[in-house]
Image 1 (tube, rainbow, N blue to C red):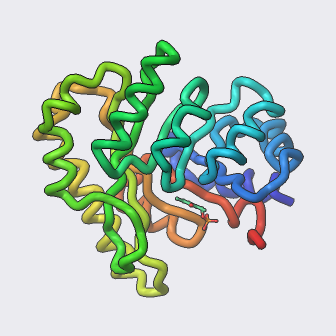
Image 2 (cartoon, rainbow, N blue to C red):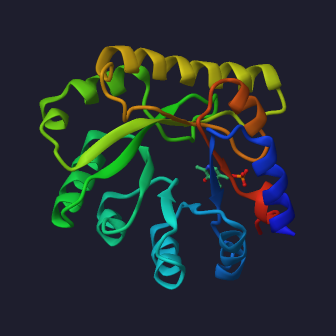
Image 3 (cartoon, rainbow, N blue to C red):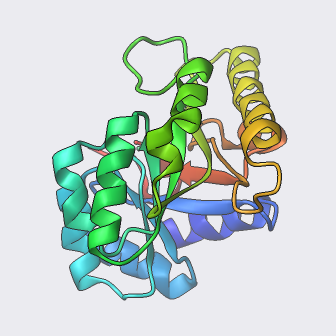
Length: 220
Ligand SMILES: *Cc1c(COP(=O)(O)O)cnc(C)c1O
């Protein structure tokens, strides 16, 4: 079942767009099934669940942390996480940098922006992101690498609004790229688009879609 969904989605997505299979709440067997089909990038939003799954699944899976992250949990996944999508403060980035150093590695991160109308969603505004990138603290960090940005659109059926929010995020990316990452090839990801809106996101310049329910079915 999830394998058929996967095949359809992989066929629709442009080759250069990364599919993050969001496996939160889903059993290890469902992940293994997509792994066997060829999927390697999986996303989780809870550190404990991420660590439990990482321990028992194949080691060449690239695990993305896509959820809101508490600083005291960074240490549990610092040895293996491939990409952290939800960085929305300098303090969190400092913690990631510290734990990455302890593990002798560089951890790739995305800055999360608030683009939706809803109040509840996490994320930076443009000015906060600029402040972070210009801070001495950030400039001195050696064990984190900002490889792009991430955002979630409003949960609405208004397509124009969703499209507008994705366009805003893509625009933030372009401005940051030209201001701070001009000669930095690593800064290239725009993580936007979920089950309900990934086609719109791809049209608006997403490089990475995070898809859960359209792959694995509804979550409880
Ligand atoms: C759960 C989740 C997704 C996937 O949501 P679906 O609508 O099931 O595709 C994407 N991004 C984040 C940050 C999530 O928490």
